[in-house]
Amino acid sequence: MTFQVTVQPSGRQFHCEEDETVLSAAIRAGVGLPYGCKNGACGSCKGKLLDGSVTHRAHQEKALSVAEEEKGLSLFCCATPHSDVVIEAREVLGIGEFPIKKLPTRVAKIDKLTDDVAVVALQLPANERLQYKAGQYIEFMLKDGKRRSYSMANAPHLDEHITLHIRHMRGGVFTDHVFNNMKERDILRFEGPLGTFFLREESDKPMVLLASGTGFAPIKAIVEQAIHNKTTRPMVLYWGGRRPNDLYMHALCEEWAATLPNFTYVPVISDALPEDGWQGRSGFVHQAVMTDLPDMSGHQVYACGAPVMVDSAKRDFIARCKLPEEEFYADAFTSEADLADADLISQ
Image (cartoon, rainbow, N blue to C red; front, side):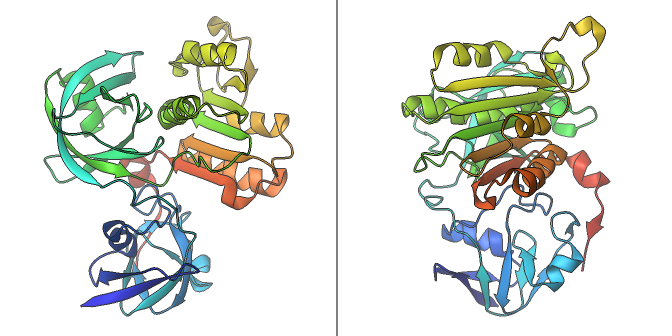
């Protein structure tokens, strides 16, 4: 059966098959529901179910709790309808601007910047170009049917190659392959662009850019896009890592800070050892933001990295620093290990 989904307050409508999630149907129809992981982990696609009934597939409790569901909230990446439904969600404008494609790509270059971070450059076929918004991601389609998501680390106008920042997750099927077996000229397949984490160019608010680890990748693309746009908006980048080596493009960020009049860079290390000789800020990166900016009521935040960092930042910035909830944009990097360790709710 096919059901109709109506989105309020916009009034947009699209059709959803009974075995399809509301989010999948929205993406297929080019309707811009906010989303991130697509697998019930991040909570970015959460909205209200105003009318009709759905069943939720397995998802993480922190993304949608039983109490939230009882209050009428729904996680659209896991919600399959049983009837026509009316939902309330803040639509993302422009998300259907670029087509989502499935493309082959050739590995052009692999640069291992540290023991566990590689920059992988991808070359598209000569007659293809991937149009995307700075901050979005692609999904590799693996032979076993599984998928792995990685954000583009370069702005779309810098399009000789698509570059990705890949951290080695020990025992991870895909990242073990990248670090141990992948070679230049290997062929991969991916789908993209995906995600609603991207630079909101219509705003003139000062930007707080918050990254942990390889969450720097889409933040880098956003900074490059802002530079390309000749933006005059103030930007402050907080990049957190456990050890100084985790800030694998520290020199680039220092260069931005030295050459861009509206850009500030604050590196933060949580677990520095004496031999590191670290003289900078220490502690949790989102707490450094709160120390410097106790009032974020006039700011816009872009956060990307480990789910615990993103979740903590959203909670604390809104509750304690007056950040408007609608001005917090995030992409939590959820690994297969994160999903395996999580407490799942299933119906």
